[in-house]
Length: 80
Image (cartoon, rainbow, N blue to C red; front, side, top):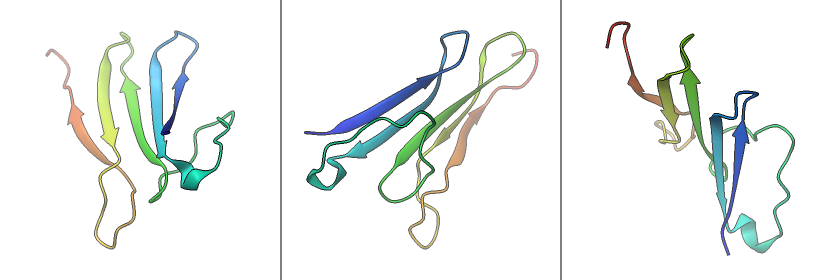
């Protein structure tokens, strides 16, 4: 069994997805707010511009040292 949680804003847009895998064999209860990034919480965040379009995506890629701090994977500029 694998666990994941999704978080939506008031406009019903996906803003955060968290994958906790098997959660060490324990049952996972979705918290009210998303967990932070670490080796056990792979988190993807989506940012939106004023028009409501996806402007940025931050993935759960590891940084040097193994910590999952997230890095921008895409950003759209105005006029695109």
